[in-house]
Length: 458
Image (cartoon, rainbow, N blue to C red):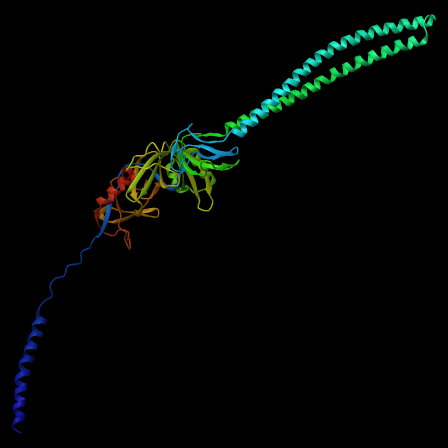
């Protein structure tokens, strides 16, 4: 029983001091005043910006195409024969110059034909000369026959008078008449012969012309047995060997001219329109737009052909030669760019020749345009841009574009030089929000390079 008061005393000795301490702390906390509070400060949103500047912009468009030769060539056999001579450089990949002999077919059969035709011509000419002599002799015979006829007719007239006087019998009159008829027949035959001679002469002349044409054809066949290079070219394929018998129409070799190479590169109509002054930036592939493009593009464009393969980068300057048909499915047009003397520009270890089959990039450049207020494409929000307005606050500005390129756009109105355009994509973009702009020098440098074309410098 004594133990219970002792436990109570211990509990009271612990809880009373703890309760008094807690009460004291609560009293002190309630008596302390709250510290003064300041309203929260507005924080500017950190953004990257560029300063608008005016540049001389060179509008560009990029397309791709496969190289081909402006002049392609096929060596087709025009006569049959066996190959008896062949140029040792008639091999795939070799370059041959105009006038070089390629190969020779055996001409013996055509020489024999030519000799036969010449002999036939000589025979026909001899017949013509014989006909001329015959005509001369017939004319002489006709004169004699006509004189004989005149004498016979006189004898016949005298015989008739003597018969009427009873001096000669009737048989002598009949004999005189027969002589007249015989001379008339002879004269008429000679006239008939002379009448036939012009037709015979024309026939012989026609035969001579025919035989001479045969001679010319045989000589032409002989000339076709010796084949030469028609223009400077690079051999693409060889389909014949020495001693091989070829027939008419056989393709013996193929080649590509080396003086001019062409690249029919595909471009969208919209990408080409900014290259022409006065074209709308949103022009499409309408017939009117294409017609205007073709009329305006002459002399305005420069072209560069590029090849990138691994560590190799090569380039060739070209000219816009013509337009090919528009592809109705892809809505693109093939612009044919011609490169003059592509093999002369080749340098060992640095630049290969521009040959058929290469897949290359073609860049077209319009005339430089001053006064381009350029902004990166990424800064455009449709037809607006975000700019840093007064008191560093966000302003959404409507702009009108002069033309648009892959990396930038030139603003015609809505921005002035010195204004700052926001590059950072703000989500959400609240009009009037406070900004903390920071000039992005790297973006400005990239923009300047894209606009002025510094990136194209090798």
